[in-house]
Amino acid sequence: MDALILLLPIALLLFLILRGRKQQRAVSDLQSTLAVGQRVMTASGLYGTVVELGDTTVDLETSPGVRLTWARAAVARVVDTPGADDGATSTTSTTDPEALPPAAGGTAPGAAGPSAEAPERHDR
Image (cartoon, rainbow, N blue to C red; front, top):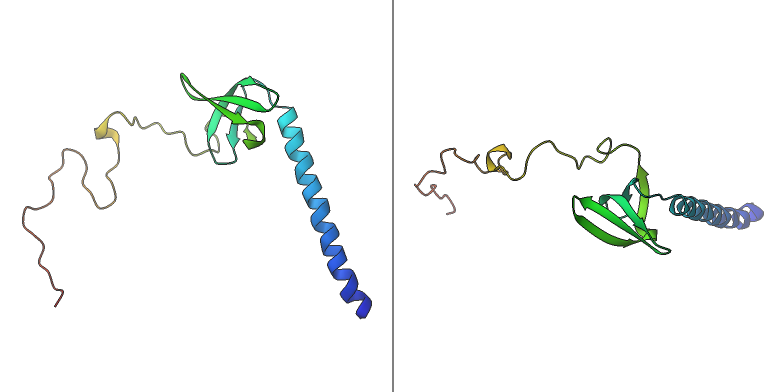
């Protein structure tokens, strides 16, 4: 029983070290296989297309004409198909206020606004 108590923490430590090395290897493989034209997601959740690669940096185009420079280590994964699993792509135009859904608790543009009367208060 005493041997088990000593071996359990050692086994846990070994497991954590091996898992960390495996993750480092996966990140290293990802960063070495980056190529121009790939759609990627950064660790902070920003999606973009690789337009230029440096030794330690990667330039991402997030929208037409917008280029951002990131550390290569910030790239978390390659997205297989644009919009397939990012959830960020929308068919709704954000420039047309009529196309946007109403804000929580608000009214849609063009709809009748809130009543001019003040709501009755019951805070006594």
